[in-house]
Length: 632
Image (cartoon, rainbow, N blue to C red; front, side, top):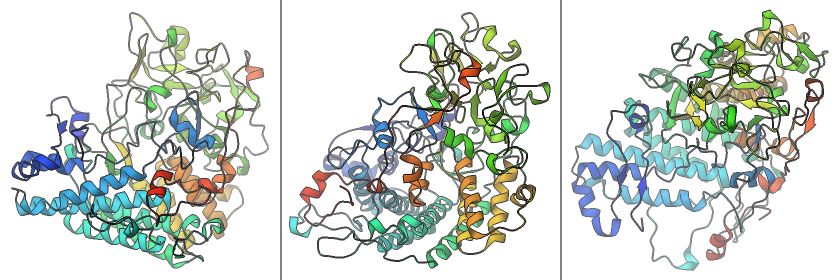
């Protein structure tokens, strides 16, 4: 490090979850003057170790690269810098959000820590743990670089600052990168505990090392990196060395499958399980009343009393005031609540019907008009407000739809935080009951655009995922400080669906269905076999099961930083990211006019050069052995 700096430590989950724990906000000593002090002081040992995590991106921050930048949602915040990515207005001169230098700084910090471990005044078990964490982070930083840029410069030791310019490192072929990173994760796992106490849940574990290794191998087996991206095959170093695989290798799916199975076994042995708790926090807000919807709403939110059983690796820095919870909350009186994170029509169609099928393939629904106006009846009271009108598409859907999506005539479970000066008048509340807001997205409705240029839903839908029902909206704004939860980087459902995907590609449909169905059943829908039998499908081709597994993943990990990467690795991004989003007609003042599919005017662009991110041109210019990605 070149200067003193402060950081929020990833290992300080207890600070975020309770008010009584000591703070982990510390200043890391300057390496040039105080390295001796660092190794002699146990507390500063920890500070140094924590500082190695400081260069990881915060996935819960909406200014991150991958949270709002896929095709899942479109927002009213197109003026913010992250919006350059869906618009395609970034390049190697202006990369806008670039992790290239940040991750390499993290790697350097890790090697600096590594060289001092033997001198530290701690017991051997702690030194072993430190070594494991350093190996984990070295692997993880390199993995994140590969995910962004493809073949990267492998940094296998602390770089010599006296290296001659002509000897600067070049990029390493992708397969070599993947193997080195996988081996480094293996080394890390040998020295790490399987679990951590809750207050240090953000630190590396052997379970996380095995899980992230499996994710790496899944990435390497996917079309983008497995010889199927023709536009990348000519990528080569200045010396002519080819950097990308030239042909598809089916064995990579076998390697991924084996690694995912090992990771699942390790996670289950460490006590991880799918989140299935019911009735949590009913005393704080009784809505949603539907038990399945409530379980799914709290799936990534519940860390009260103990670590979330499903989450294997988490980032504990949490959200800021203008992140997902605030931007997703419904608008109250006086403009409080920013109601600007809007699911797109593409994303809404990925959610299943109540029968566990895509709407367009469900015999009960496929011949019905999605946009037909219907009046909600009493039997649908857990889906929408009886007596109100909505489009048919919003009714008869799976529980995740109702847990995570707010729609016209539907509900948003959130509290009025200021009873004396109410955010939500009685006319806003479903049946007048506190904690359940009735949504109206027509132009002059309680969630309508009105005449605002910001803080509105561009599609007439509103995200609920990641927002606690017991949070509140008042005249002064959104109060999401009641809770502060670690953000899931890797959870068990991810391993289950990754394993199902690898099994499909390896020709093992039976096992794929077993692990696919674990996630479906927890989501409150039938098994794939039961659902597709309704559509006349009694056996699955590889292509059909691939489609099913991918759709399941898109639904399950909605707004969890996955869509941005999955669409790329599947080579599907051009099809979905390069077209404008669609939603309801939010300029309409009547329900009849609102119920029309309308194009959102915000620009969207994606070409082949967008599959990999640009290396900053300044770095390419400094290093004659470094070649940029195609298109930059």
